[in-house]
Picture 1: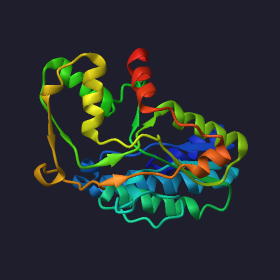
Picture 2: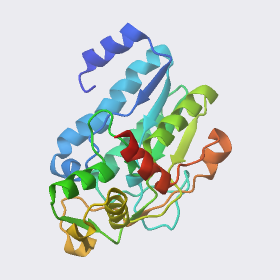
Picture 3: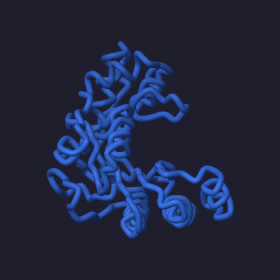
Length: 246
């Protein structure tokens, strides 16, 4: 979706009343290492879709990220000021700004650490940990970052509610359990009967990555509960569903 003629052609072919834009380079390290490509896909790609969705007055739904925030607040609400700490978050902020300037109905969905059975082949933290442990590979996982991981079917369900209710605006879609990546990895090992001793706890200060991560992105989901009848799947249940499905 970075080639304008292709974007224009596809939208003219289908003339959509609704556009759900979930495409992005979402790996923070890749975005920091390849900023030009990240900008082209995450920002310019969004702008092109918005430009040609205007022709059909499509309801434009954009999947953003918790990484638009710095991680310094205890809990984030939709209207809180953004302040990304890496380039991935910056591109999402720029894309959000473009969406908010769209002249027709729009909605922004901000999920946190989506997980679940990877039906399309794309892995997530849980399945990546499981695969590594099954191979007997050691893992170094953060203990000092905290998220409210979101089961993938909850995200899909929220988008359906947004579409059916024409619910414009920004929505935080997240789980209710506060966990570190280390907590998640150990839970996967225990659930699958794998060796949790292969998981070494580390902190951000001792683990070098190209892109900094926010220390904690914890979301207030009251708005989604009130307007979308949103009820997050518990992590315990989502963990079971992830590996039963797989």
